Structure formats: structure tokens, C-alpha cells
Image 1 (spheres, rainbow, N blue to C red):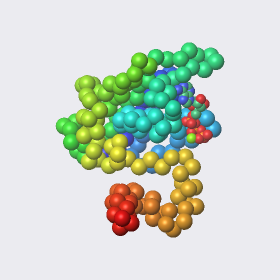
Image 2: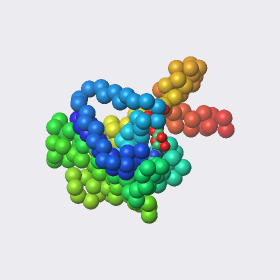
Image 3: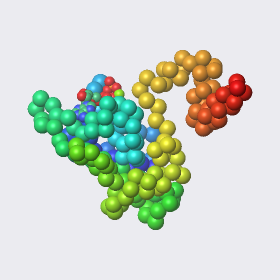
Image 4: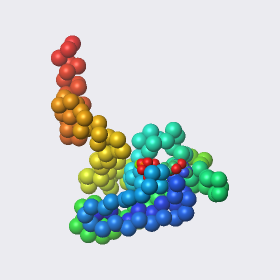
Length: 180
Ligand code: ATP
Ligand code: MG
């Protein structure tokens, strides 16, 4: 399983349809400051069902819709399509290729489609939940986060590892219980 392509339409700075094609292995996105590299990563989280405006570096969910520039009027909707190669059957669906699409209008609410069929957020979450790339599972290290990991104290670094392994919440609960 690997990400094959990502198409953005009206998502953040990508007013015109923009398709990115990926190969198996490592992909690098390079470009000047403010050219939209982090917006591409935001699109990836968003299409997989991200519900938090803050995680998408915005104040409200509608901030993902192209807001206009001096030369171009704002748009009314944002659309992102993610195509995943599923020839190894890692995703529990009978297709060798899976396309997830999310659409959002300024009036609010998101629509999802899986291979062209209307779907619910829950369907998207279930599709991705055992794959290691779902909303809760994918590992996205945000800009600046790497510095804080490298500069962390040993205790802080342990916290990152524990969080990634999903044991931090249990340790916090235990510490709370021991204090009582
Ligand atoms: P850096 O190298 O500094 O990290 P970057 O390539 O990651 O830059 P992004 O943060 O992806 O850049 O893009 C920032 C740009 O996206 C800004 O110019 C901002 O105005 C624009 N942008 C963000 N949201 C929207 C939106 N809703 N509509 C239009 N433009 C937007
Ligand atoms: Mg950036």
C-alpha cells in the first residue's frame, strides 16, 4: 500500500486543480517559503478526516477553502482526492486502488466519497483504521516539531515515544492514581 496521488481543488492556496503523483518510497516536496508545502500535508490530513481546525493550522474549518488573492476571487468549496494503491490488500476493500474524496462548502459540513460512492466520515475512518495511515494513526511531524524533539530533555523525549506508542495516557492515569 502506498499513496499514489493527491489532487487539490480550492484547498488553501491551491485555487486551481493541482495533482501530485507519488511513487513508492520517499517523496520530497520542495519550494520557497509560503509556496504551499505545508498546505499539501494539511490536505493529506484533511482528506483522511481531520476534524480539528487547529491541526490544519486554521482558526475555523472553512479556512481550508481558498480565500482569494488580489488577483483571484475566493472560492465556495474545497475538494481533495487521495488515491491509495491497494494491490497488497492492506485496506479492507475489494479494490486494488482506493480514492477517498472530501468536499466542503462555505455553508459548512463535509461530504466524503470512497471510489465515487457517497460515504460517511466513519466509513473513511474504518477503511483506514488498520492501515497505519488513518486519522488517528498517521504520523505527521509538523514544521518546527522536529526541533522540539531534538532539543527535548530525556524525560521530554520519553514522552514523545510514549505518546507515539499510545502508552502516555495510561502512564498519566497511573500517576494520577498514585498521587491520590
Ligand atoms: P514554509 O517554507 O515557510 O513552511 P510552506 O511552503 O509550508 O512555507 P504553506 O504554509 O503551505 O507554505 O503556505 C502558506 C500560504 O498559503 C500563505 O501564503 C497563505 O496565505 C496561503 N493560504 C493558506 N490558507 C489559504 C486559503 N484558505 N486561501 C488562500 N491562501 C491560503
Ligand atoms: Mg511549511
